[in-house]
Length: 157
Image (tube, rainbow, N blue to C red; front, top):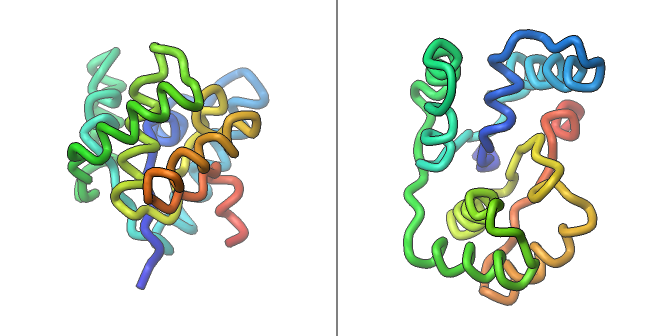
């Protein structure tokens, strides 16, 4: 059985966008593409309505490219448990109001039993300063937190 993996929106953006002139961003884009091409099939990959909404935003052409990546990926349906956990994350981590969707990504992954949450969002998700608090809120709510990581961390797995 393949480990369940929640694919957060930033990974899709890095996967589909034109290679950046910024060296760090370009490296992350290449890593994301390598992971997608060589390791994605190692996991059962899921998205959520939050991912679908975020990938539809912005430039129509870019949104269409992002949508092609999502074809065939199962969509998790967040429920009241995810809503409650997201609220707790917002309050107890704490996260700023603008991070509500980030909290929803984490909560959906946790309440759905995802083993991994893969992201390039270092501000509110893959943030070492917040990780312990995110995990503590998940555990105290009765959920095993997903391993929050980047595609790079899963390349060698």
